[in-house]
Amino acid sequence: MRFIRYQKEEESPRYGWIHDNKIGDIEGDLFGEFRRLDATTPLEEVKLLAPSQPSKIICVGRNYAAHAKEHNAEVPDLPLIFLKPPSSLNNPNDSIILPHQSKQVEHEAELVAVIGKRGRNIISEDAKEHILGYTIGNDVTARDLQRADRLWTRGKGFDSFAPFGPWIDTEFDPSDAVITCRVNGQMRQMASTRDMVFSVGSIIAFISSVMTLEPGDLIFTGTPAGVGVLLKGDVVEVDIEGLGVLSNSVE
Ligand code: ZN
Image 1 (tube, rainbow, N blue to C red):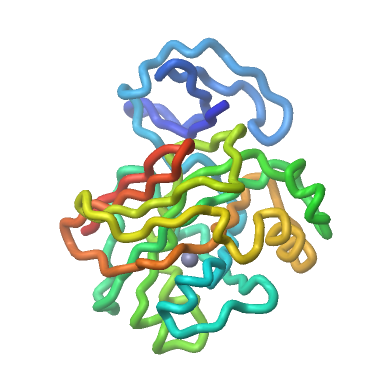
Image 2 (cartoon, protein in one colour; image 1 turned 90 degrees about the vertical axis):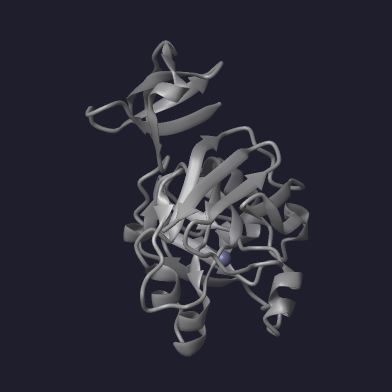
């Protein structure tokens, strides 16, 4: 099943589900009790929005050894986590806005887990029960500011720096999927999710030992090697095999 959030013309945003390229509404709470209404609206008639409204966005740094190496960093012994603010959320197909403070804004293609059920101290084996599904994310980063500051909040936290979508897929298997990033059609990043240092289950166990995970929260699971600069006018696509493509332009 694929769930979306969408907006039709001037109507208010809604959650929906996709069947045969058509959308049906979700009546009730996607993260609780709900009913799927008939899918009748063609997908191309609506604007797709970021498919969840998280209370927090938790990211894992250096979760692919080859990416840690390209920055001359060690793979951490425990998951290295940081937050992006909810104000950095961005919709599929909307623009990533280059801030004037940075001269080096980069893409980071990532698999994203969406929390479905609240939890604290979740053990790795139970992580699956707390995940609604998976989506695609771009952990856009002002690399020069990330390097200049000891903390990553500024470099990772600008408005528009967390595009994700276009949908949440509840059947996706994260164990071995090819993740690719293209800029203007040219390949920049390609790896398999099996190269992650820490699995999704162990990441969720680690994060939930620190903070309660709430329905809708996002976990960005780290980026493979090959990160590179985004320039005005670029189109950046993150493609995850079996999941779809997240596309954003750069302004
Ligand atoms: Zn990242």
